[in-house]
Length: 519
Ligand code: NAD
Image (cartoon, rainbow, N blue to C red; front, side, top):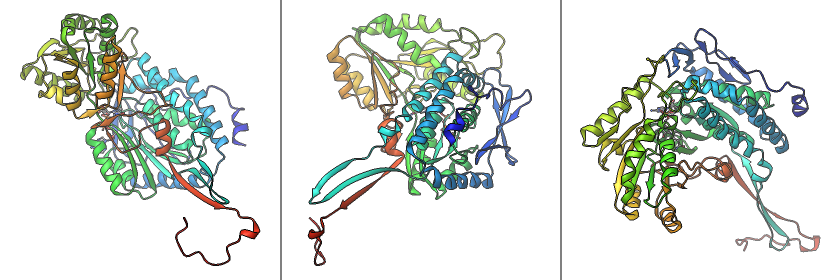
């Protein structure tokens, strides 16, 4: 029924400007299939990072509203978990098409609230879309296992089944991709989902919710609440919630992991990073410098997989002046301006923090080869802009190395050998991503095997795996034991039931009780 009625609808759906208007619009809650105005007395402003103008408001949902959202998830679970897997697959086939048809609209909302360039915002949607496309293979991904004849007339088989109500808590830096790592994976497995987007960038998530509804997801399968600590605590504490996916900072992620686990929930927590790009002197210089500059300063460095640290090995040290020249050539501008390479940071506080971390490097003896702190962007004087910045002569005990900067700042260290570089990377507490640039296969192989980091690029600066694999950040960048999306994502959002079944011929019927352990 659902599917047939879907095809009658117009494509693409009209989603543009639904949640914005000229005066600051209010971001709605999405409860039980309805976009509803919050009754909260507490609201937060959402700013355009390029101008700091208030563009919308977001509520801190009330306790009553949060309860209504989770109750809606619980009610919807009863029928959604029993919906045929082919129906769920059809909804997601439809959903991926709607996202594709509206990619520009989604990107615009991202640039408005988050600040990244439009081209980069499309990439944000695209990488999330790939996860949605992957969910369409659910009919294979959810297969169980069978082993016939484990003893006479006896077979064992497993079912992968949903958990119940699952929840996601998202960060500001990928307003489309990260929510799309979460609820589509959860829903396609038969769970219902409570999502709390970042209070700084909720607009894109609301558009994605509308499209999911238009794709045919029944009321209550996805509910959205807004807020900060109280909403996070609610999610960590509510007994109906069985699993929590978190992406964001270590401060929040460690708290959520501990609190959620203590309350008996599954938690996967993707957190901060300090990703090293190791540059060997035999690397293709042109390619390497361009890759490094793109990965350090793209999205103004606000990516958990940004290559924020370069280790120049041996003679690659001599490439520093050219690295600086390339970084200098990047154009800093509002994300919706043509030709912009580097957009603003998310907030004045983020700009202030990045500026003080740059200063700490200078104070501790690093050389400031390129200083983006006083960058002026014509027409956007109030924006949170920091231009590409390079600190060299950095050592491992400096604050600009030990802290995640999350801005357009590349810190450069030096090493005499590959072994020294590996040692440095392994001593850093984070384990999200890394890349090695080399033309030597044996060097690449050694690096790949010896470095204790979850995602490794060989001449690939931002090795975020496609969704048939999983996002395998490790050590200080991850808590939990099952990663996001791919096979591990399916595992996270399902539980296994193992059935042992015996069908005997009549004459083999047990004649007396079997009191010993069956062997
Ligand atoms: P954040 O931790 O400030 O916010 C993330 C979410 O947690 C938000 O929804 C927010 O409301 C909530 N939150 C914030 N502080 C909290 C607290 N003290 N207690 C409970 N909840 C809290 O993160 P952010 O600034 O939005 O995102 C940037 C961070 O996310 C960076 O550290 C970045 O490396 C990380 N990140 C990691 C990955 C990854 O996959 N490893 C991907 C993207 C971003």
